[in-house]
Amino acid sequence: MTIVVCAAPTTPVLLASLWWAGCAVPLVFIDAQVHRLPNVITMPAAAGVFTLLTFDAALTHRWDPLLSATICAAVTTTVFVSMGLVLGSGGMGLGDTKLIASVTALLGWWGWGAAFGAVFLGLLSAGLVGVVLLATGRVRHGADIAMGPFFIAGALVTLALMAFVAPE
Image (cartoon, rainbow, N blue to C red; front, side):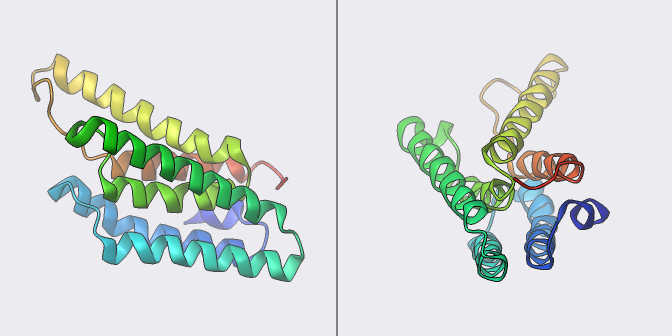
């Protein structure tokens, strides 16, 4: 949680980050165990992030970060839903899509690079783990990988990097 405290420039952004992190912890364990990201956690995670970022924008009169966060979340959600529709069960699940909405909303506050960097890190790390699992024979081609923990890890790494970058 130290990462979140260092990255947040204002109290509402800190609270949004802590809210998201608090929701992310059970999601990692649930997704790793049952390959599901339940609405009862993903939806409040996104709602809390958006609410607190909106509160920050109203307090600071800086609406650009909120607009960036909203656009990032809308674009990535649209891409993930499209992937699910086109690829069917081979694409991202709806739980992943709802999780990615909160990830990119939170990190989109810092800009497009932070939001999409987190998604990239999540996809890259999942791909690397998948290759290792295939190479070692622990899984077969076509096996499902729980993506939630990877997206959450990508978001936390990106938050750590944002602790060293001034907000836009």
